[in-house]
Image (tube, rainbow, N blue to C red; front, top):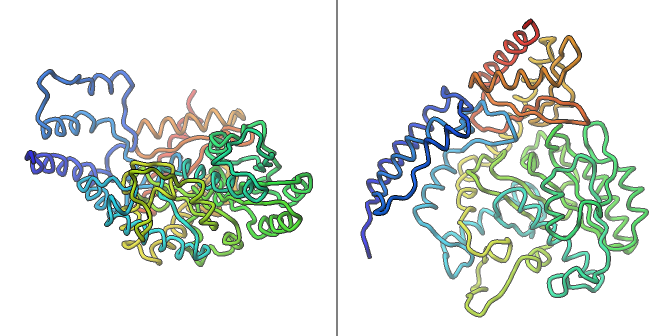
Length: 473
């Protein structure tokens, strides 16, 4: 076997990684750079004779450093981006070094068992049905895709159609019910599965983008046949939770009337609330539904990329995902990851989840949901008390919608000015949203490292720049 300079590469990469991580509290949250400058710094085409790996890594670290966002620094409050838990970071180093292609137990037995255990622990800590199946995928997008593929399989199987064998052409129609405010990744996953945007039945939400049970009831009364319903555990704008108990009751009645029914929960933002006894009221009835998806790189703070798909009906999940070939060695008495995910060749991403779950423990998992919610409320109270802003949503989880109050009434313009000024200063990062036709600032507290001082520092910067923008001639 050819020998490589592993030590030289690790020395360079390790020093650069440690410098980045230890500088996070003080480095600019968003770097000042334009596209041309970044390209100029990195445009180093491959040389004819190549370059030593350690030198390449060192130059990459040096050249890219000025343009890295401090997403794991505690003051990155945009786009529902979690930070990086140290246990996840350490596990990712090992996963890269081990370089296991992890589709089957036969190919990579150690990491296959790690994922098997992580799956079991997740189901237990979230209080979901004990025999639920789990797939570790790339993110919330593919987690929803996986769960909805299982839903498509099962509701069609119940009326005698095998979608994996026969496709969708000629299949019995499937009614898909979504709400206004449903996340774009759910709609995109449905599109990938052959359910076009205009084919969906979209029902009204309330003023917090929660599904209205009365609207769902009316919609279901118009449907005769296979039905898929998508609801949410943590809306991307308001952070709100749907009424899972009411949805479960309606789904059971619809099913009892002879309509195969599957309810999927998009929990990308706040599925982890199910691990918190203090938030039990928000998730009552969650365990009565059929599938659940989340982004582990959001609130769980696992390294990118990582998503989790969970299905009550393991047989449907496996039927929708699994594939067989003569050269594969499946069913060796252990869990084969490829039976539960869309990927064949795949990174052993469940290892990072395993490590993070063990490090946090049950108390730490509950604290993540509770603490980020408390810090979101700290944001809301400080901004509201200032008189410069209004809070648009009920702050029930880690999301805050902020209306900046412009004297001329152009609140959206002021929101964009304030966000741009704070980004340019580098003190924090916020992203905007257009919610019900209005331009607002959105605060997402998703990093395990964020503390009260991070919130207070960000609030000070926001109010200072809002005052400057208002008084500017």
